[in-house]
Each structure stands twice: as C-alpha cells, then as structure tokens.
Image (cartoon, rainbow, N blue to C red):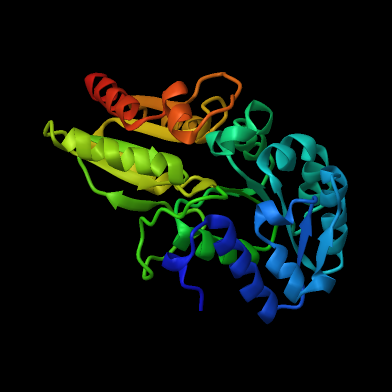
Length: 316
C-alpha cells in the first residue's frame, strides 16, 4: 500500500503506482526517452528490467514502439517532458496510437509553468489544445498525490490511449485517502452559489481555492471544481454549477486557446449561455523563472482569479 501523504513528489507516487500495477499485471511496460531520473521510474527499471525500455532521445520513435507493443497486448506507459510528449511525437501519437486504436498511456511531465528553470522551450502550454482534438482520447491532469495514484490506475484500466499532464515536483494534498476519482467526473472541492471556479491541475486548483477564500471575505460565495479530466469534460457538473451560480471562471496552467476553458465555453455556448471568464496563458511563450514568479508573470494568481470572478459576476 502506497503512503501517498508521506511521498514528497508526484513523480514518485506515479512510479510507485506503476510498480504496484506491474506486480499484478505482466503486460505493464514502461518506456523512457533517457529521462528515468527526471520521471522517477528508475526504481521501476530496477524491479522490472525486462519491462523497462530506454528509447534514448527519440520521442517519436518511443511512441511508435509503444504502439507496436500495444498491438501485441502490452500496456505501455510512455514518459517524457510534456513538450516532447506532444509537440515532438504528435504525429506518431495521433496516428500510430490513436488512429490505430491502440492502448498507449502517454505521460507529459512538467506541464506549463512547472517546467520553471527549464524555460520556454520546455513549457508545454499548448499540450491540452493539441490532445483535446484527438478523437476519443482521454486527457487528465491530477491535482494532488491521491489523484495521481488513483487516476494512473484508472488510465491503466481504460481501454484506449490516454494523455496525462503530470507535475513532477511537490505533493500538495487537497484530498484524503477516502476520496474517489472517476475519469470524466469532476470533484466539488468547495461549494458556492455566486460564481463557480473550475480548475485543473495542482497549480491552479491551489490558486482557485485561495481565490475562493478571498472572495468569501467579501461575502461572495465561490464554488471550486476540480476538473481533473479535461476530456471528456464533466458536462453535467459544469451545467449544474453554471445554472446554480450564473457565472463561471476557468483556471488552467495552459494556453487558453483550445484548453480546458475553451471546452467549457464551447459547451456552455451551445447548451446554456453563461458569463465565463478564463484565467490561463494568453497567447504567450514560456520563460525561465520560479513557479511563483511565473504565476505573476502570466496572470495566473489567486488575485487574478478574484478579479475574473468579479468580472464574471458583473456580466450576469
């Protein structure tokens, strides 16, 4: 049994979950692009050397190999930085994995500003937009260690290709051990009636919770939803809270164009037109800096969410 609260970072929880799955299922294999130390899977290789494949710095080839393994009944988990997982291997993931109806579990680490000192070249702001348009693909971003553990297992059980945005470092805890996680079903973190804050991922869920508490000081009741599954969007939950609060703010560590906020706007625009403000990357490239600095640089802080919430409420 994994002690989620005792582990310091997401990548270690992810790796320990893979080990747990591999002990139960000999079909689980792990593919790396020379980044085992960064992704945390070196321990997996020590335990299962015959099921750990280092493909070298050749991400497109790695996805092709994973697709071939899937065609033979294996369940490949494919790990690299998000910028390489999507931009560099996009065609292979689109065609060899998804179009061919294979069962490839692609994991992109260091999403958005969490790439920090690796800088703009390594900040996959566009990965949600790229993966959202692949038919039938599941796209998730866990927000804490419990979510990492349970959603990794859910992706394993899902028959079909998936993409997970995975923050490497840190393990903020928003949930207890009894929390359940279901693909395609968001979680109500805080209830509220005046505005709904919909966040995905650890960075923005934390900021949304802080914003909700700040709004509470001004007698504004803000619900917070964790939309850990970006695709398929939990339309029932979004619709119910759009009707309940009448105003929505989406919060994501990614480009707003094509991101989770776009999914919310597209859905509500057709089903229940509502005031929506989006907090996310606004058509910019990344840059070097601490996560704290980058939150300010790209207008992703709780203060920016508070401002967006007030604007959305004023639009009712």
